[in-house]
Length: 187
Image 1: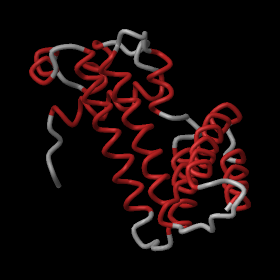
Image 2 (image 1 turned 180 degrees about the horizontal axis):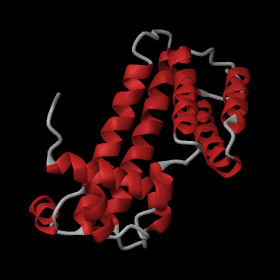
Image 3 (image 1 turned 135 degrees about the vertical axis):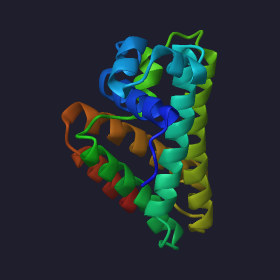
Image 4 (image 1 turned 120 degrees about the vertical axis):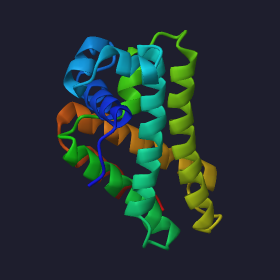
């Protein structure tokens, strides 16, 4: 069994607290207490709560995309891989008891001058959208469709985002299921 290092304790605690109660309501002292570490131990790794937040965002970015890759690793058809994004999000929301999107929650808490945080949020959303666009291009859809590839990809992305927000609000994944079915019909 691998020993739990201080860095991992900090990150796991920050991940849980930032997600469950929000960044602004989470204090450094709470992280220290719940991680079971000393204040100097935390500051050996992070000079500030803001620096911890940036590390948290980098970590959840990697975990999210790694998780999606693992979830869809055996799926070869581009359309099925596109639908798998919905299924991946549904599974994550069920597992988190409909806790919502890390990125939406953090960006809602941040003032406009928190450039580093907002850039990371934009990076996640833009890379998710780029992934959707790439899958749509691989589908080789007929050119005479109601929506061209760019419009279809935009629609898929908006359905992913809107369905996720409603899933958080309603505490039910039905909105993501509905969005997935709409995308199936639009193809």
